Image (cartoon, rainbow, N blue to C red; front, top):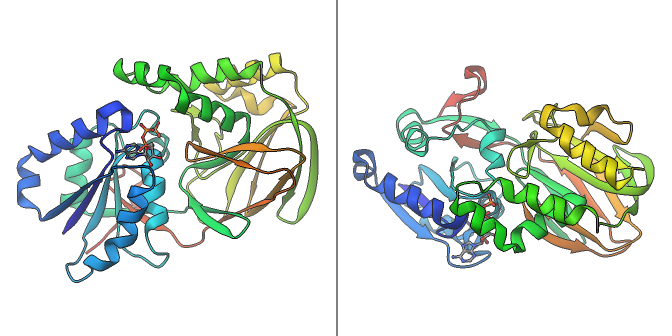
Length: 319
Ligand SMILES: Nc1ncnc2c1ncn2[C@@H]1O[C@H](COP(=O)(O)OP(=O)(O)OP(=O)(O)O)[C@@H](O)[C@H]1O
């Protein structure tokens, strides 16, 4: 049996439309399926956590049709030792995960690949811990500026408007400009694989499992889907005007040449700041209190993603 989890409001209705197209295909009529529509924030996590009760009827795959925020919830709802493959059909406004794992843009093609080819490629999540709460992240976790931008983009009516014009990925750019000149620098202490660094006038710290952020900005150009390391980008000791320059040069990858931009690979990061900080995880935002720490590590065991267009050597057929 295939379990569909569809967020009907993702991408301002785009996921719902994609699912109704899939429903009309001949292939959909051939499969055994159960469909869940998410109804509220956190619902996808509950649905995924309850899938264990369906174990008597073998779950062939979970097919998530949504934006990255709902995928994040599903991954966190699944038990840690699950070997149920996860398939994702992007229907949000940003769709960075789909770029990161090379899913392509055609939802019907992805659906056919999932059912017909059943070829899975491994994907390694990150985990983060604040106080006693430990969670996984799919794309990235970011502190400071990018979190303030994500918060602004999620709250703004511009996102809905741009989604209607099929320009959803521009909502991040428009929020970026509106937040830039109001944003305040912070001091931060980082412990990267055991080595301490301190940055004053820090602008953002971003940890990613693949290169993309904010609807296609290739902000971590060297980041690879890999088991033991994530990429960390820090922007620090910089004027606001120069930050604008940094973000403009992201378009061709030139930002990594600024002396105020540091990029490293690591297995573990601990972050602590002198003041309350916004953070974003897979595009959804929250706050961390002054002097509260967050520890981030790479998760060693992969989940298995169906339907990607990655190199053949990275893909294996599953039964
Ligand atoms: N029926 C619902 N009503 C309100 N919120 C919902 C509903 N279903 C899911 N959500 C919440 O919507 C949030 C955003 O969903 P998601 O990321 O899938 O779409 P998106 O924001 O349109 O896409 P993107 O992340 O690419 O911008 C999630 O945090 C989820 O908890």
